[in-house]
Image (tube, rainbow over all chains, first blue to last red):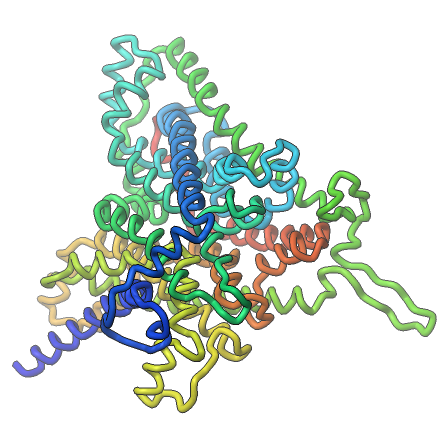
Length: 276
Length: 325
């Protein structure tokens, strides 16, 4: 009997360790963001004060609201474009047999494994040629490289599993493929679209390498670059309070979204990985 | 794997009418063209240009005037009058080999530890207990936090003067003086590994959990009836059955770890102890104005990852057909 209790206690201890370890850094960032002045440099494990100074500083400090807006626009448009291209492509890849389908799917999978750095030099040239350097359009354009293969891949696996009969009925009624996609599949695909859209949004929101390389002024930067480059009056004076406040601002919406859609996200992640 | 069973379940294609078949195929082509063009402009062409630049003397300020120089960026040598041979190029660059070593070390150690930690978390989540939903929500938090934010958060926690990690370790008597975790060459890699493991274990755990949940429950019931020890059940039943999912997750993560950039760039800037292939390539491409040299380095990284991808597709036997439609 005692052994059973010990086992149970050990299990719950493990559970507590996992939860605390997962959440603590974010908790500590929030705690720090509410500190001001010298109390920032005292280590506390529990909240000691609530001061909005850091948050005020973030929003008064020049370009951060603009960066936030850039991130929202870029991530939203990237997702919209990727989904538009991916739904039609996934229909062709999953419902129609044609020569070279396997090769095409293989290529798409390989592109999603691409190291971003491998295209950086070439993409830099393309973006400069199109006059997109230091604009949000350059980033929307370049983010296609990771959002499109991913959305196509996941939507293809999803569409492949839809029963053939619904489509056959539409074909018999004389529906064109476009009608089949918009009227028959779209209503069934909302869950998959929400999931892939959300995952693509997070990927675009978090992207750093392209955003760092293809923008050069404060007003066109996205939030991750802005946070990475936040600096104080001097090199030795890192504004930790402001950085933590900015971090909390960009992370809270993501955490909330992820927690609301956690079941869908988990199924989307595993569809991209295990099923692939 | 899941798709293998799914393939056999799929309804075989019925030859409806060949006229219909032709029009469907034509529509499929029309639907595929935008995606293919987009991928060609954003991935195919830039990749070819990067490889081309690696054989030229291109510089950032004057990309268009690039002249072809052959393998000079990769390997070059000149014999001095004294008979000594001077080697040049990426393949003779100790900084490059240091980056290769850092990348491999990081990828292998992080993925190994993430797999172990991920398996533990997945086993916990696969058990039934009160509060399982809370645990699942909690482990999604690190995954949801942007990498740059994680790097900054941990940078603050690992701060040498005011960091909570030093404070905690001092209180627990694990260390006797404050350590500059991210700035010291000996500990910088540990700091990077800690943050990466913290951030990526949830992803591993969820993939492994999906594999665990596909194992039929009655196998466990049978093992329990036969009185098989739980540890033996894990090694003999659970692990072999979850292995396909585990392998895919491991290779997926390895490919991801090989190209790591953002965490290292922000957490340990300019530390040669953690500089990886991606970091050194970008440094040469953009910061040092050695555009062609950086292109050669990124081409090499691409070749390594391409080789690994081929292995992945071959080993994972990825199902591309998914039944006849």
